[in-house]
Image (cartoon, rainbow, N blue to C red; front, side, top):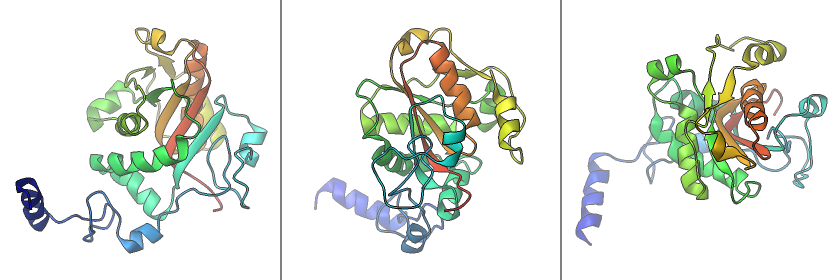
Amino acid sequence: MTLLQGFQTALNFVYPARCLTCGAMVDSDFGLCGPCWRDTAFVGGAACDSCGVPLPGVDVSGSLQCDGCLAAPRPWVQGRAALVYRDTGRKLVLALKPGDRQEIARPASLWMANVVQSIAPENALIAPVPLHWSRLMKRRYNQSALLAKALSTRLEKEWCPDLLQRVRRTSSLDGLGSQERFQMLENSIRVHPKRRHRLAGRPILLVDDVMTSGATLTAAAQACLDAGSGPVRVVTLARVAKDT
């Protein structure tokens, strides 16, 4: 056994690996225990090509659209989600955002990379959905930026943490309907004036922690397109789904 291996063994003895959600001991860091893994609804099989929501059936051709995206097409060309926002998936999102569990970004980026790597263009620029500066000061970090940074490492692609700016602070979206969310977020995001050159004609991969109606991602995608970007794609850690 090498000195490094011995140190790691001693460290694991003092600080054993714990499940990301329940704290039970697991075999390796950043893992889930058996029960939490079983309660994690990973998005697999048939899913909407635009928003990533799971769909009935087994068609994995990538051409399926959910009713919502058929009724109101998205400004982006494709979208993916790693988890369904329920059970363990919901716990992970809440732990990452208000729970200050920044270490969750590491395993989450692996799950996100698995679902988006097949559609991410080689020269895509990865960018997080922004927080308003006042919320960023209060929270101290942008969870979407943590995910974007980790994902850029997984995919070996460039990322720009401040490509987008939230120019207007909006009220909480909790409890609002889809139309109200879209109205509130309209024109609330813009491309940073000093970063416009980085997206000119270039495909963009937007990253967020969770997608509900898609209003925030719509505002972000539209800002990129208005500034002259190439096609926009989106990926989220979790996707809210009514019936899954």
